[in-house]
Length: 482
Image (cartoon, rainbow, N blue to C red; front, side):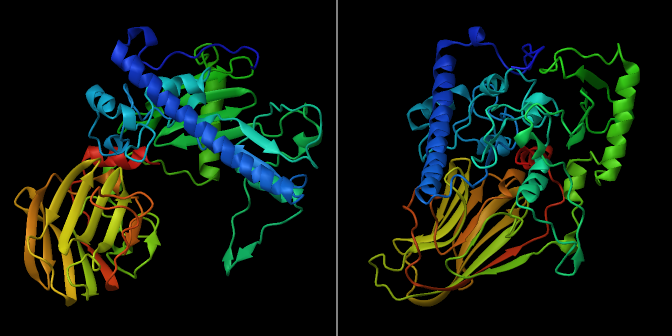
């Protein structure tokens, strides 16, 4: 561990182990056991890749790079969550709900997340966790394996580097150059500093001495062994933010704020942050959050999609974003089965077991399962669907202040039910599947892939413009997934 390392102050939102009751300790332990089990599973898959490369004599000349995307995540809150989408949706989860799912944790029925206390422990000795600009949010180990190019006896390098340094490293060791123009578009210069110099000189001074950070108004900068961090409250002037200052060369865990002892250094790093932000296109800073979220240009948003059976769109960037709006799903089908279930199956599914919705036919009835973080609303037609060609539709709509779902067959309403709410912000980035639902099913009413067995010509999705009043909860849910 680096010199000068101490335990960073505990996040005030994290409770000490001694303050937990017996049931909390039981649940906490189980959730961390699940995390440890998945880490072991991940390690086995990496081992399979290594074994494959070795079997084909490719391991010696393959550069393997492994790191996490951020520090451990505190999104599980005080008690953890059996279904993390309750956090994304701003619904919360009680200790009793977590305990009720105890035996299912880690299995296909849950989407669990360990408590924030384990995130703090996982980042020890670094300060805080994901979304912060402190070390717990942005510092992670980087593992490289390349027998032909990394065969020095010293295995640990301590130079400071950033994730953007990986590309220039790979380019250097492969002796490649990026194109200046791609498909007629002039390209930005590659940012970052190659780490290849450390391969043969493990103790060489770091060539990376400056790096900025910015996440939703939280800012940080590392420069010449110092680090400055500014936490920010939306709506407050950026100039009023206090910049903490740490000498990370001898205070790795950012325990001792030296901003008052060295105001000149804090001021220098603050100015350096603004210069780097301008250089790399971070400016202008915009902390409007909810207002900014609502201010998306509707002229640039696609409101109609036409999907063919078997297609899968991974998220609300490439496919429909259902969050915060009414929508219609229209499936053109032909069913020739005679009541034995051969004409059943999924028409359109959005999400997975943890949350989403599924529009399907089961036992010749048209069904919608509207799943808000494992709270299911089922809407189903009473009578069997007709054989032959048909247009099957589901709509979400407002009746006064209430949200309803309506199912239609050839324009005639066959079922309707009240829904808890429109899909909130955290539901905008899930995958969409046409004609099937796998590997994780949105609904418990069928087993994957539940492929539609009639003829599915196409499914059309029509989105209404986003509702004007996007709540703070919706914004928080969107930000939680960044």
